[in-house]
Length: 314
Image (tube, rainbow, N blue to C red; front, side):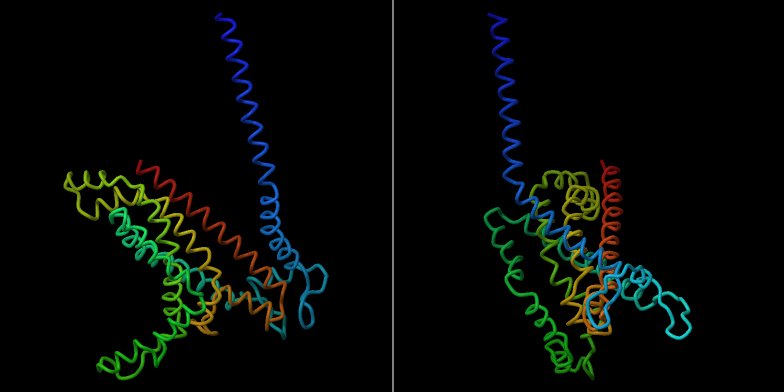
C-alpha cells in the first residue's frame, strides 16, 4: 500500500505541476497582445526620436534623411556664425539646470506637504478615509489647463493675492509673482501633490501604529519617532511618490509655459520650441533622448542610495 500511495502522490504532483505550467502558458498567451502593443507604443516613439536625432534639419520643417551628429553636438556646444568658434551652449545648460532644480524642489515641496496629509488620512477612522481620499483626488477631475489658469488668477498683478494685500495697505504696488520660477514651482507643486499623497497613504495605511506607540513609550521625541520609526517603514511610498512627481515635472510643459512665461522656460518648452518655431527637429529629438537618459540615471542613483540607507536602518 505504501508503494501504491507513493506512486499516486507522485502522479498527483506531476499533474498539479503540469496544470500550473498550463495556466502560466495560457496567462502569457492572453496577455501577449497587450504586452506587444505596450512594447510597440513605448519603444516606437523612442526609436523614431533616436533616428531623427541623427538626421539633418530640413530647410523649413521636418528633416533631411542625411546622417549627421550635429544635433548631439548642439546639445552641449554651439558654433559662432561668423568664425565657427566652439563654446558651451550656455542657454541649453541654463534651461536644463532650471528644469532639474525646479523638479527637485517640486518633489521636495510635495513631500513636505504630502507626508503630513497622508499621515492625517491614515490615522482617521477607517470609515472616514474614503472621504479624505476623495477630496485629495478632486483636482484630477479638473483639466490641467483650467487649474493652471486658476493659479494665474490668484498670483497675477491684478489677482486676488495682490488685491487683498493692496486693500489692507500691506504693499504699495503689486508684487510680481507671475512669470517667475517661484510661480512655476507653486504651480507644479499644486498639480503634482496628489501623486505624492496617494503612494504615501498606501504605505502608511499598512503601518503598524503600535510601533509608533512603542517609540513614545521609550521616551522618544516626535522627531525621533518620525525619523527612526515612521519614515523607514514608509520609505517605499516616499520613493514611489518622488518618482511619480519628479519624472513628469522634469518634462512639464503647460504649467511652466503659462506660469513661467517665455523667459523662464523648462526642458519641455525648449524641446517643443525646436519642433516648432526653432525648426530643428534633430536637436529636439536629441534633447528628448538626453532628458530620458538623465531621468533614468538620476532614478537609478536615487533608488540605490535610498535602498542602502534602508538596509542600514534594518
